Image 1 (cartoon, rainbow, N blue to C red):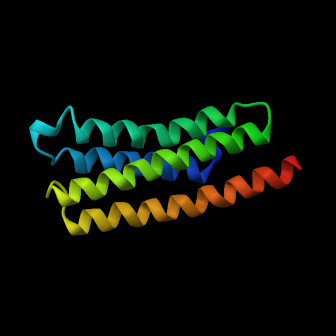
Image 2: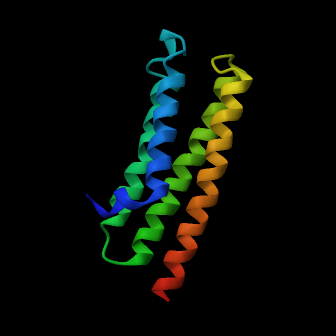
Image 3: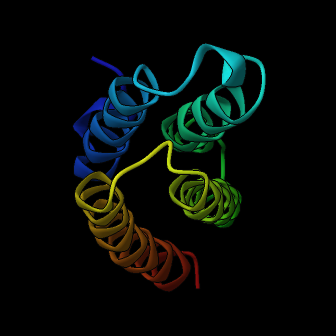
Length: 120
């Protein structure tokens, strides 16, 4: 088992990416290379950055990758708003994903703080 696999934040981020994949399957085929692709790439980068950051030699480097993961999460939230406005995403699914995103942001914030405290 890799060290990042022990992190609840990584597991939640993988589940979030899985949910984005499931929901974007419902998007129109014309969006396959547009919003669908953008959402999926941004969602996948969230757990990927957690995993990559966990391999860094310093806690401050790891914290930086958590910041990058947070940026990707914000990117997904912005794209979800566009998907909702374009009627690719219904209100229920939008709320579900945004609620998950809010939970992840709180978890990332706590992880970042703990990494900064222990590196000081």
